[in-house]
Length: 109
Image 1 (tube, one colour):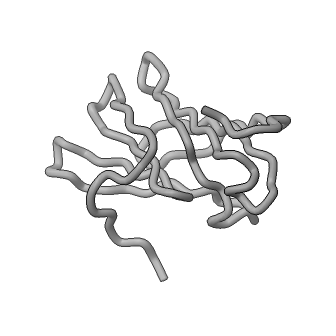
Image 2: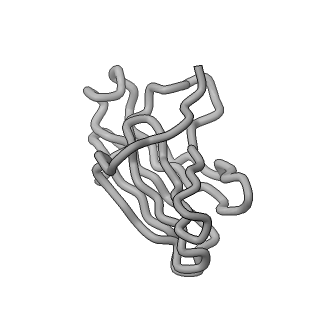
């Protein structure tokens, strides 16, 4: 089953890409990207590795130039005991996971 839309903003974090104006928000194990220029078109970012749908995002931030997005995962109790990671994504037509920073013992805020 594919996620087709997210209604409302229930996420814990929200930020705006200074380069494109896109709005990113957390929605559990998905990052939702809204495009105000195209009347709210949504895209979804998920981890592509074997940890499907187990990461719960707690925070996010675009770089000052808008080329990268950093996302932080929630405390391990919310992610099935897996230590939380910080992920860095390249912001292009498709968001690509570039780096995974491991070693966090508590959730990333």
